[in-house]
Image (cartoon, rainbow, N blue to C red; front, side, top):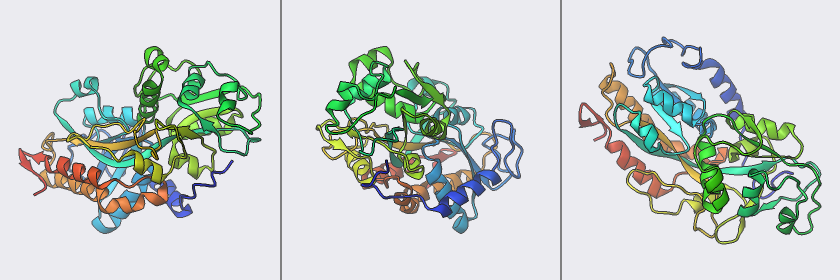
Length: 371
C-alpha cells in the first residue's frame, strides 16, 4: 500500500522532538497552564518570553520544527496548541492567544465576532489526501470527483462498486463495506475538503455545503488529523481525508484524484506547488481547490496564521508585537527551508511577496512595526 512515487519522509529526529516539545509546552487552554506563565493570562501579557498560538493540526508538524529552529537562534519560546482551526480562531477572537492558525480564511460570521481587524499571512501550502484501508489492494486507487462525492454522500457503500471499478481497470476490488472517517471538530482541513466537494458536486453543495463543520451524511468522527488517521488505520474498508504529511508519516495508502483537466494526480510537493500557480489577492484569501493547473493536485490549500492588525491591545508592548511579527516574517522566509522534508510545499514567490505586504501593514499604536 506504500506510495512508491512519493518518497518524502519525516525524520525520526523531528518526530522525537515533537514528542518532547508537546510534553514540555503544556497547553494554556483546556485545563493546563503554559510553562512559566499563568494559564488565565491574556495574549497581551508581556510577563514572559513565550509567544502563544493555537489552531490548525494540519500545520503542527511544520510549526514544531520551525519553532524549534527559531528558538535556537532567537531565544524565543512559542507555545502552540494543535487544537483545530476553528478552536484556534475562537482563542484568537477571545485574545487568549496571540496568533491563530487556520487552513481556511476567516468567514463573515467569524469576522463579525472580532473586536478589531485581523490579517491573514499565508504560512505554508499542503494537500488533503484520501487515505484508505484496503490491505489486499496493492495498487494505488484512482478516484474521480463524482465517485468521491457519492462515497461521502453515502451513495456508494461497497469498494467493488462499478463506479469505483471504472476508474481502476484491472484492480481486484473487494466487496468490503465502505466506512467514512471525518473530522468531529471544527477544522480547516474539513473546510478544504468540503469546499472541493461543493465545487465538483452540485448535490454535495445543496445537501451538505462547505465549512469547517458540516452535518456529515454518514461516517465516524475523529478529532484532529491524528484522530481521523487513527480511525482509518483501525478500520478495514475505511476511507477518510487527512493532511498529506500524516499519511506519509504513518505509511498510509492514499489515492490519486482526478483533477479538472482530467488527469489522475498523486498528491506531492510538486503537484501542490503546481496547484498554487495562481494570482494571490492582497488579503491572501484564496482557494486552491479544483485548480485549473493540468498538473496540480485538486485538493490543495494555503494555510494561514492570523493576527490582529493593530498589535497594541490589552497590556501588550511594542517589544512583544515586534517579536511576533519578526517570527512570522522568518517563518515565510528562512523557515520555509524545513517544508519539503516534512511533506509541505514551500510557499511560492508570489505567496511570500503577499505575506510580506500583509506583515508590513501590521501596526503598533498606528505605526508600522516593520520598516
